[in-house]
Length: 229
Image (cartoon, rainbow, N blue to C red):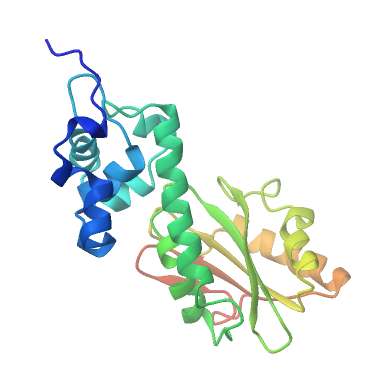
């Protein structure tokens, strides 16, 4: 049995991910090599490239890996707590970059704009995630803030937590967004009740709730379009 713990230096120079990235650029690295750069080291009896391949084989694709919890990532041989944290951080940075590079300051034209903005970030999540979009009087995007994760309820969507980012951003209006992991975007009774509470709280604060949008992987439901506000 091979109990040796492999490092990147045990790979031939031409196969080391860092050297490969320097030589050919990140665009020309395989998914396995990019993962290996994050993982950094192998485990007992396996190289870092083997650990990366184990990850891909276990989850099937990057999307499943992105949505995995730390405990689920640690189930893969060679992935410990620290590496699982680095993987989650890398995926989250990618999500934030996708939103922030081009979207802040742009005008939100309607619910489809919001769907395209957050589809990749929350459309595939296994738990409900509650977001607030802060806007100017002309519907230009100021900020995108996550409020909570979990089944939507009065405790998770308390007006204090919901409107705090909007107040910090000096927003004039906000759009509430959350996902339905089931794929069914029709509002529940809880969704309707909480929306009414948030609209009333917004009136007190002078911040209008202009829409509440429910997102799934492939579709969305706008409260405004359905005259539910």
